[in-house]
Image 1 (cartoon, rainbow, N blue to C red):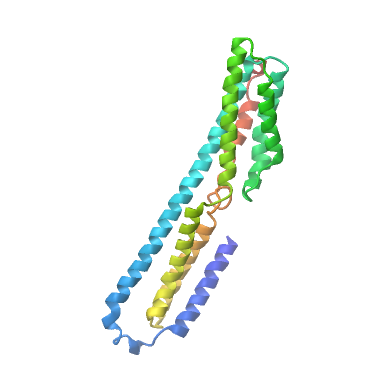
Image 2 (image 1 turned 90 degrees about the vertical axis):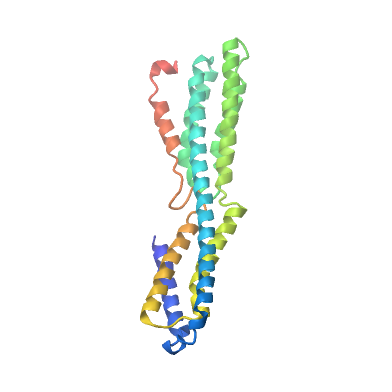
Amino acid sequence: MWTALVVVLVSVVVTAVACVLLGRSRAHEQSDDRDADSRGFLGAVVSGLFIVALAFYVVIVWEGNGAAGDNASREAAAVADVYWQTSVMPQPQRDVIRGLLVEYPKLVADKEWPLLADGESDGGTTATLNSLHAAVLSLPVTPDEVRSTRERAMERLREITDLRRERLDSASGLDDTGHLMLIGTIVGAVAMVVFPLLIGFTARRRHVLQICLTTAILAFVCVLCLGMTQPFDGMLRVDPEPFTNLTEELAAIPVEENR
């Protein structure tokens, strides 16, 4: 928050100084009246390009964050499904698999999730997931009930692995299109401030105040955009709530269901 405030204040100060130094006197207003229509059209084009780039960027970020949240919910649901299937598994595999299933969401929420902000994964979480695969594969193929449970559990584990892989991929941040729209947004914001100074801007107080206010808004928008490049960091970050809720859900299962 303080960083955003500093960026906005610096941008406003620089813009105000530029307006005073580069602004024209009122004597130029009459001579520039014939070009007012063309200047207004070019300004509208610059503003339109900025709005389009900003809109596309917001949509990309919103969809990316939504997909990351949905995948986390699906991953946690798949873990819970495997846990409930363990009721027909024989010992000692059942207790081993249940212990790993209880450990996995804790590791994701406590260990791996903070690392996602830096685009990294947790080795312990990977090892636990690999151990789960090995434990389920060690289940016998007889009787039919156990074999069926083994197959369903393997399908869920493959789903968990795929969803985790997608989660780690999304932790790397924006794709090429997202970066392009982010660059377009920042360039458009700068152009909206620089354009009137280059084309002609009188240094009257109300004009300076107007462009400084515009600069403050655009600088704040750019700071927000830069803070939304990663779905697991920033103001719109995805929280590990599905995994923390799953940990509580598994702990609340009655003892008789664990037999």
